[in-house]
Length: 180
Image (tube, rainbow, N blue to C red; front, side, top):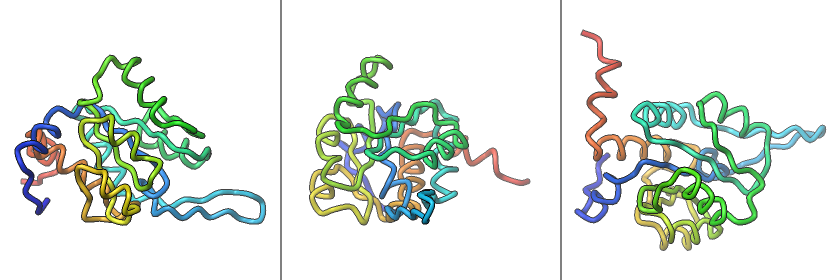
């Protein structure tokens, strides 16, 4: 984390208890490979996954919302221990509102990561909105923060580390891996 954050962003990040992610273009590089039999393949970054696991260990909940429906996403979510997935979403704001009601949290407690114009309405309703480095210009203009890394190439890990560091949880997480 090389960037300095102003007081307002630090305040937003400190209140995060939920991280909601788009999938294609955020957890993946946005490429969808479909073979002749219709089998779908996506590329996920292992460090993004580890970042999410570290974040979840501190009690921050992770939810996926995606416009597509894919068994690959179900498998990846299961591997990571993400229990809530909204696939085939036609209206991500409705999904967000459902999450807020169900979990009894406010929008200010939510960070959302997206990469395209369809994510902007959600950006406007959460406490901390994030666009990945290779997001559309419209998404970047609407986000509170733009990652240094591209979607599917460490952007999610970057954000996880930022949240953990600003919330004062990073040293505790890292201490699990230190060898004396």
